Image (cartoon, rainbow, N blue to C red; front, side, top):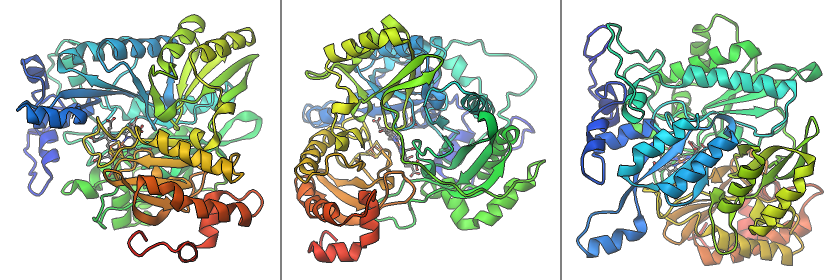
Length: 573
Ligand code: SRM
Ligand code: SF4
């Protein structure tokens, strides 16, 4: 029932999730009761609502077979995603996550492609104390997942000039405006008092049913596409003015990478230019873009519910007009964008005011202690001793910021003693690779990613070295299913899992993420990938024009021509 006027809106024809949201009393449902129950897992409806609280119910897929053989239930566990706007967190917040990961999760921290932390393997009984510890560190998991605005990303370069500060201020405004207002999170996880009032609780932006689907926003800084602008529902590019001021924002809409194998009605789309707005107009614009999607997004079919489908179905001109009709100011035409080569912000850099920052490579974002690399202990010790600000990058890496010149040596020493290699010594192919978590935690994975990519990319790095191409900047991104969480459709080379051990090989995108790649070879068994790529790399080495990237060369050469030259069989083409 609608809390504002008491009417009961009809939900006929809406998807199951819409009914769950509408009857959830602003995301409460029966989460609290189920949390108190002595069971290892939540029921189906709570599983959907928990996502809005930043919590995914998962199971350890490695242990399924054994459990089945022993007649046991799945090994249920939860993943918590902390929402970290712009990927910026304090030393205290980092250390709190490190501690949660050791006390209640699987001992690792996972930096995500959207600058968040994920904690895997939390048991139901430890959920509440984990969430409380995240909040005590002044962060939240509310809106980490679910049909709401997700974490708002931003280029993480920690410069303190006026431009960067003004951009951060705008992001803070958008975060405040677009975060759900429900008291459910506070009540369930933080033992907040239930506020008794005659005023109904309101979700002014999201209403009773929230959005039709997830909604993602990123902010890039003019010229640097390190946050993969074109993958986003709402992509904002901050434009620099004179004297390092913020001149305004170019705004793009309707990007999204998720698709489903053999379902042509699902597709990958890149964001399209919508408008240019002044700095003080961006929060209102973001709100109305979200509101139009709230009102017109498809609530019957979740596979067709992202903003990219609303725009594909109704047209960009319709969308612009609808957004404009809700604004008190005039949208200006979008300005043309141009990009410099993407900067991953790794290595040592001056940050201004006599301080330095260091970007540290974390393979596939997994901060862990392994036999060779002890990134969990190493980062903990550096952050405990020197208390730098921490920033997470969109390439799953970590930046330590605000380091005094006198402390640089100590940082290098601690990194070396924990086996964390300086970025200069990491082969380019490895440095520019990303993989999603996939197995064993992701319930949607059909193939490995994070666990298989290190082996594959080392073979590729060796191959590139043999061919004299070790210094080339070529990006390799692997996902364990077509949802594309590592953004595999926006790099030079994408590997998209089709079934265990097999991948669609996507080529012809570019390093700077401005163009989608396309299917070059389907269902390639992983051991055959290096030999599939070898002749392409050889030809690239001899035929490329100066400064031409691998993806650009593939695009210029043409797929049919390349397939013909390298005799790709009908089956894999
Ligand atoms: Fe994702 C679902 C992991 C970025 C598209 N994603 C999932 C889930 C939660 C699986 C699930 O629903 O049960 C995965 C959890 C795996 C695990 O065990 O941890 C998952 N996605 C991730 C992360 C952790 C991958 C990573 O390597 O870091 C990223 C977390 C980002 C964050 O902090 O919020 C992550 N996911 C992305 C991106 C990239 C981006 O947004 O820049 C995409 C493609 C862009 C897009 O959204 O179009 C992406 N994830 C999806 C989709 C497909 C959405 C669609 O429109 O079809 C799903 C499935 C769904 O929503 O139904 C999904
Ligand atoms: Fe899971 Fe697929 Fe996303 Fe990988 S791409 S994390 S397998 S949903």
